[in-house]
Length: 621
Image (cartoon, rainbow, N blue to C red; front, side, top):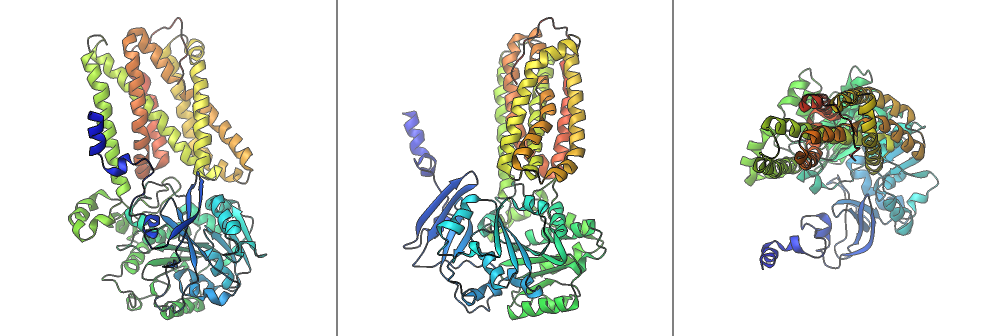
């Protein structure tokens, strides 16, 4: 009866037999249109791709399209990733004039500056930017796409619909992660185009704020600049949000990258325009020339785009067409290029400090001090400006911490007489808590460190997780012999020596891994997986020792505490998975590793007096 009551009381979406999709997702909304239907689905670890046809109300997907456009786009198929992020496969019969509307998007700006460019498109999607490049007369096009299912849909399944654009002789389609491809490219390009592939709703809701993104970091921008020709340009298009976040953060990243490349006047290498819903940033390897600036001004004027930055801009040049109550982008660009940059970034209501490979959270804009104001304005749209993912993660951490405390401390208090002195209980509990936090901190940080090297997060998770589990298990198996021989029979001494090795290895990896990865990035995937496992092996081996040795030490004093040691360590593992992400967003992955090292170094002192072990039994970590 109780179960039936609970089932009836729960929201329908919680007990539905089939997976439930939010009514606010783009796919759900698209399918509400009469006669809209799903014509193809493809699933992989990279997500569920859903192709939708809508003959009654056709899709017209052209982000940043000018209000001056008079051409109706051709028929399109919408490709949704996990029900939200959208790409379009556009019907094309081979006549470039039929897709002239693409010339009136903000992403078309670089083609007005460059003639017959060699183009690299990082994120081919359904081929919209490929169409633009071909129409603009690109000499060659290299299109990079990370999802093989998307490639199959665009190049094979719907090849006839798309006019076979991915089979053109001057186009090469690459299955690769964007950053990894750029870092190993052996060619020079005139234009690197980074199109808009995520949905506006996802960006506005802040659901991406917890996702590590190595495409938009200072180091990534330097990689892009490195493979440009002398007059090459990087073009990045993002959704326009007011007050701006993405665009200003990109602008700050570009400035930091140019300065790191030794550019004394980064303002002469940057241009930023906006439409009513997108903004496109140009980052040039060489300073924009006078004729380039004239072309940018002309392009913006004829398409009713607003210029937010171009060399020589003044306040009278901005906010003419798509008028805002305040020209945020222009004012932000001025501040970011001024000596007061650091103060502006610190005072801004959203986090717009440049993302780096150490803190690759480009979509994290949350600031605690802005929370009260945004909540106070929630009836006026303030709630939509919040990065809800961050708040949900914090809430999850609080819930997990409370549950862990109740499930651990309450039974310990009930059985306090059987478990020994309170001081020992506290110190032993803190020891296993520290181990659980430290182990996962390092593991999660290393997963992120290996994303760039292995080319994709899924590969990094599979290889790093398997490596740590396997070699930590091996370390657990040899822990008894390590304590007997190296620790001279003392479990605590064995633990102290093991954590010393862990600290040295972790610090060494923090310094050595980036240059090692840079030199080995071009290796085949199989070789990189083997190298990754070899690098992980020694660190994981020693990380597997403190837990079984701690169990042996504690068991010799109070066998009844051993189940609680397992429980405390397990709860710490749950907490650390959440806490590591929050810490990485603030102090970076290097900071997370250093916190783990400190926890490891403190742990042996929590076990108290050394205890001689005559017979030791290996435990699995």
